[in-house]
Structures are given as structure tokens and as C-alpha cells.
View 1 (tube, rainbow, N blue to C red):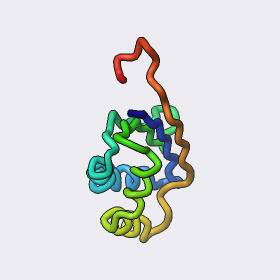
View 2: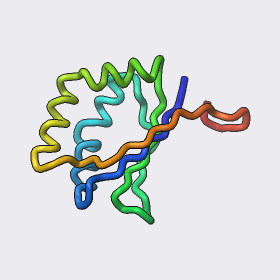
View 3: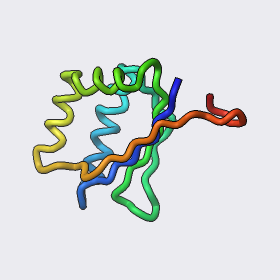
View 4: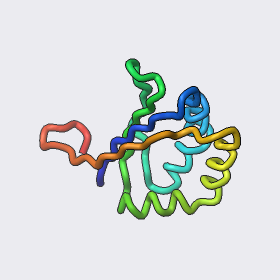
Length: 104
């Protein structure tokens, strides 16, 4: 069991498109591929940022590979960038819970 903290910086002016892609497609596809959403947030200080945490079942690298190979993901991504890229940058960090964490 592992957790992953991800931060997406949207292309300027495209945060609404990024949020729509997550809301309408990505979250359900994560679930399908063993990635469970812990929570999603937008940054108060940097409104073009989306921050979220995933809980992975099994191997995170395999989860991501399966997700990225999914035809439904490919179609959703392609449709979301018809008017230009919506993601400028992605940061990812894998996290291990401490012995006093309520999430394990």
C-alpha cells in the first residue's frame, strides 16, 4: 500500500478544463486501475494548481502504465487538449505513512 502526492500546474487559463477532465473522466479511471482518491484540492495562493493524493493498490508503476494504456483515458485526454494543452507541469512524490499516521 502506498500513497502518492501529485501537483498539477495548469497551462495559464486552463484550470477549469483540467478540473473538468478529472471530474468527468480521470477519477473514475483511477479507481478502475487500483488508484483510490484520498482528496483533491486547488491552491488558494496559486489558483492554477491542482493537488491530490492517491492511495495505490499494488504496484504504482503498473497502475500508471495500465491507466495510460486505457483507451478511455487516451480518448478523454485527446478530447481535453483539442484547444491546446491543459497541463504545464506535474510533480509527484510517493509517501510512506509514519507510525502515528491515521492513514496507513
